[in-house]
Amino acid sequence: MRLADEHEAFRTTVRSLVDKEINPHIDQWEREGGFPAHELFPRLAQFGLLGLEYDPAYGGEGADHLFTFVACEEYGRIAAAGVAMAIGVQTNMATPSLHKFGSEELKRRFLAPAIAGTAVAAIAVTEPDAGSDVAALRTRAVRDGDEWVVNGRKLYITNGTQADWVCLLARTSDEGGYRGMSQIIVPIPTAGFSVSRKLDKLGNRSSDTAELVFDDVRVPVENTIGTPGRGFEQQMSQFVIERMSAAYTIAGQCRHALERTREYLQQRQAFGEPLAAKQYVAFRMAELSAQLDLLHSHNLQSAQALMAGEDITRMATVAKLTAGRLAREVADLCLQFHGGIGYMEETWTARFYRDMRLSSIGGGADEVMLMVLARLDGFPV
Ligand SMILES: Cc1cc2nc3c(=O)[nH]c(=O)nc-3n(C[C@H](O)[C@H](O)[C@H](O)COP(=O)(O)OP(=O)(O)OC[C@H]3O[C@@H](n4cnc5c(N)ncnc54)[C@H](O)[C@@H]3O)c2cc1C
Image 1 (cartoon, rainbow, N blue to C red):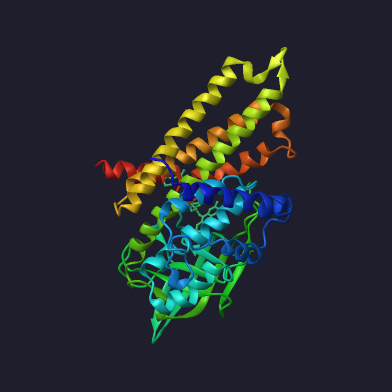
Image 2: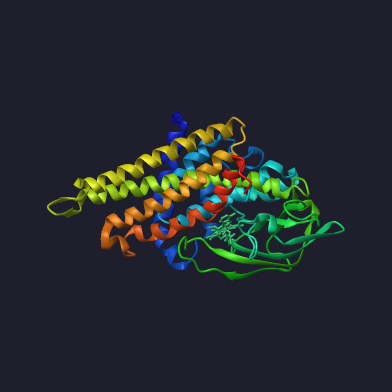
């Protein structure tokens, strides 16, 4: 399947935006350990990028999923993965449940500003004692009249220091396990809410990552997304979009990295010829390029299946696992083939190597993807 002309024209628009309005600032944002989401997001919104598939009634574009596919691939050309991740949180991780299950009033109050870029969103699932095992989470929302009273901690929350609201997954009954959870929108600032730590990271440094504390935070019950008690299922459905969009972005990041490395290998001389002329070097590059072609095809097929309304849980899991592993291999090989200069911070490979390490952990570790696949295949793990 080929993308339509309108998708390719859109690709050109996103690429130019990335080159002109994001990449010139990346080094500064990496040094500062964060980027100004409240400045960048309204600019992205002017191009419809924060609500591509969302209902025009809330400011969205009502476009098909292939526009998301293209946008994510182009975010792969952002010179730091942290900014791509932060945009992804806003569009494909913190807002899909709200769009799909939220009440009209909630969408008007929280989705519309997120699409306009005037509100920054975060997704708060992970906790100090519950990451891979989402069903073990302890943050609790107890009903008191028309309000939830929320207590707990959320860890590693992207956009956490600058969010205007978080999509919180909390326990709202005593059923235990994956039952009795709800997705609740918590506006920020709110009494009892605080950012206890901004975390220092190996990579993705231009994206802020925080620990959030909820200490008797009161939120109206009407801020519940969808059906109370169905939060786990709704979050699993949100994870499918998150994992697919991560795989699209990683494919874009790998493509760009292989292109840049090929250019370097063509001009770098060793033993009287360009490194690109070494059969081992060329074969390894070709091998990764072939793997990337397979990921790209799988991503495109998954995107089409999603548009056709199919359950793509398995496809999204395969995509996330494959992309995570490929990203690490590509980052390692690109650095290796650059030699000493590849290890220097002045070369893009150093940051890329650090950034790509997250791809096998964030949004569900490789081993969790394997667990999901093994279970789908009938293994009792
Ligand atoms: C930079 C960054 C940004 C993030 N952003 C967000 C965010 O915005 N919102 C949010 O909610 N979370 C976020 N996360 C959290 C992320 O999703 C979790 O870190 C991830 O799901 C793993 O959970 P954990 O860190 O608790 O690891 P653990 O659950 O403690 O697992 C540790 C390791 O154990 C192995 N493992 C786990 N389960 C199994 C198993 N069943 N079988 C075999 N091995 C297993 C894996 O190798 C795994 O990496 C972010 C994390 C990072 C690092």
